[in-house]
Length: 474
Image 1 (cartoon, one colour):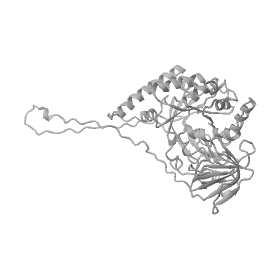
Image 2 (cartoon, helix red, strand yellow; image 1 turned 90 degrees about the horizontal axis):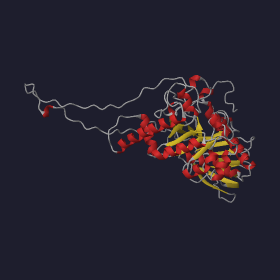
Image 3 (cartoon, one colour; image 1 turned 60 degrees about the vertical axis):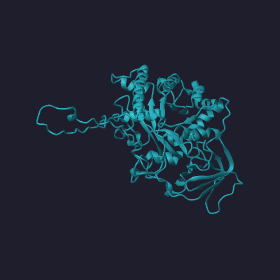
Image 4 (cartoon, helix red, strand yellow; image 1 turned 180 degrees about the vertical axis):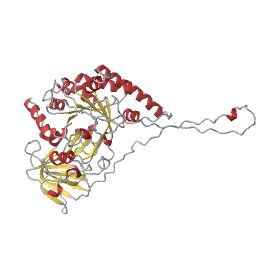
């Protein structure tokens, strides 16, 4: 997403090294010997803290909880009718059918006629960086002062009081979300993965141990933003040239680090070196099939991997290539035509990607759409079925479950209801692919964060307190 921004360029931070001169004894003459020269000081490699703003998220109190008699979509394509789940100490303890042994000392919830899924994961959100209300003072998602701003971190703009977080939780069952910088720049900065929990600080929301991402963008946005300023890039070839030159610089910087050589600290190069070492995942805004293919070629040239293409309205044209490369596509159900690179979309895009066997994801990029990703997935599922593709409800839930977890490097922790994983769970009051269905209860790490039937479990941000309609879920 690209939005307007009013701001100034942040001052660069540099790390200086100074040497100390040795002072020799006076000889009473003007003649200096070699021993009188300052002693050479060996340069020392930079050792920087890779996690200077660590997560302080600790979770919330939990209770041994059982939901029984419920239809379960496990997030990996499995389904259990008349199933049960046990949540213990913040984890999924076990999942099974009606014959599974259940603890006798647990809080028991009857899920008859209801559905249970993993918490919904949105890997493309700008909540907190473009919070509600949407005013210029809150426009903090695009550092549109240069086409390469890999040094900025989206978490440093996140406002934890954004009412969008609680609406995403209560209306959409969103338990995890990746907050990305906007798409004005070729390299817009680092993304951050958040737990959707109340917090006074962004560190209190940060998903412990989650990899950072690098937001990249190709196509119309960067060339339009900087072409309008009379700067490079103003064309798609300019986009590629600036990207390649930057990756070449990053590769040289990383080589010095790997060799233990001294370098001046460069925050942008640190991020890009993290990408080249595989520690930071590339999340690439890209619409057209030909451009995605070019970006893949560029990734081969410089030795990095794209984790996911975002928006990817022409993913259906290169689904086989994306499958071969192991690259996910995070897509809308039916947004198209708002600019030329979004023109050649088809409503079957998501279903075609899935049937090819590629990693398929439904994302939002919007503060309203994040509240109904289940319905967006339902639209994509219906389009596929109209085309004759046999995709079950439980298979389609992978688009909101294990696949987005994979794209953000957290498939071992979230995205499916498997024993040992975090108990991020949503109980829906009906089939989650129905427009009439809403979350009834939402757990994060086994803690009940929302209960539609309990006013005390309807979270409200500090910003909303005292506002008209305080606490309303809309």
